[in-house]
Length: 161
Image 1: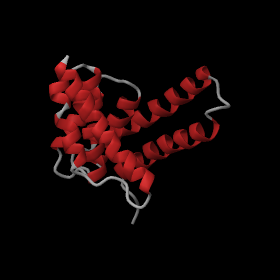
Image 2 (image 1 turned 90 degrees about the vertical axis):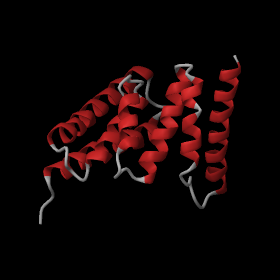
Image 3 (image 1 turned 135 degrees about the vertical axis):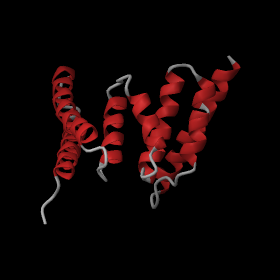
Image 4 (image 1 turned 180 degrees about the vertical axis):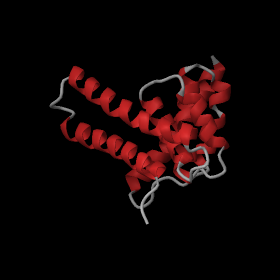
């Protein structure tokens, strides 16, 4: 049995994103800023096209929430203002997985902090903390909990000012 078009579109989008990340991480010190930006824009634009097609043409797809989160994550990484509403939509989805829920909360906390809306931001580190972080590596686990504590501190400090 073959794959459905929505699954193929998602796999293409995720492959583009992962390829960009792999190449960037491997060659980040060898690429100039302009080349990196062109490369990022090309991969992101094409991945977003695939994700948008799933979201618009396959609203009942089992890949819909993954596509919505992947789109929101790309928007967040690109400082696109649409990230906020798409991340909030992910949180409303009953089929969102733990990673999607965890990172949506993390990114929303960071967006609200950047907007200096500390009261709203304070809701999200607590929700992010509800999901298990990395397992196995002590440094990754410690970083996960430090990140949550740092977000809380930023919110509390912002509310005081």
